[in-house]
Image (cartoon, rainbow, N blue to C red):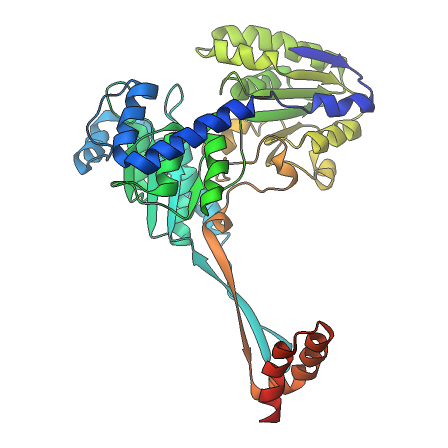
Length: 425
């Protein structure tokens, strides 16, 4: 870990940089994968399963029987936990549904907006070292609430050709239409282009490694939308004198264990809390099964001592973290100052894991500084908003002159005539 004591503001920009990747090499790989999937469809996906996941399977579609068998492979305790999380996530996202409100902008001119679901959505769920069944809930629940007709899920198979049973259980619980055994950039290509088995979708959601992220960005060249540009997970913790070092360390490690390319930032104004948090990290990391990932992540991470909480918030807004934890005594005072963050956790007991799993908020969030201009996934992510307007005869008479003057001033006389011909009638 890199420790900085009272760095000058001129150096802050350098400290906000994330670990970099060689984009050129990744881009070439993505183009090749898309080309292969476009040419050979399912056959290409089966070959990629062998190459990248050591899975030799004959069919990429998850069967009904496989889904039904998951019931016996999951403990009742986990089923209950998934159900509880589902209820909380549903409650929070259902509250985002809005009523239609018709506005009369001028007498006889009525405008309003209505939501329409994105009909076909694709969900990518990482497998591998951390099968993120929680992300199934975070994406399929709002898709279902929004009214998406097709929810397609792709996840990489293990060496035995199976998808983690918890992923399958969560998927069937949340109304996923079809599930396919394919991962990485090839899964994104399949949902973008369509294959014999996998339908193409209109928008792709979900986290992933640098190849998945690059593939999602590339998919936009084919007219497919994505939830957001996103990369490795990250957290920034701001702590004052009442913060509990053991809690701060646990939160930092909970993000560091995601992978070696994750990044954590710790900022404190108190030397004692600062030093004790570092000691706690060194103690707690020894107990983690994924301590190798966490240690690699910590090598890219910054521990910063600053003079004031105001400075810490300024640094955070510059960094724009995916997750921001305010382990502060009077956190309410600082809420209005937060400009850039994916999701914010307040006080000593709001651990970031709560948002990751079961508090109800969505954990699919902008990373890599994109919290400056993107929101996390919400119900709105799964809908388009269509505007409607109705002008009565009186409405056009009231507004017509304004439109004619503006259209003529822009030199668009056909636009003007569309009004004039009606007014003259």
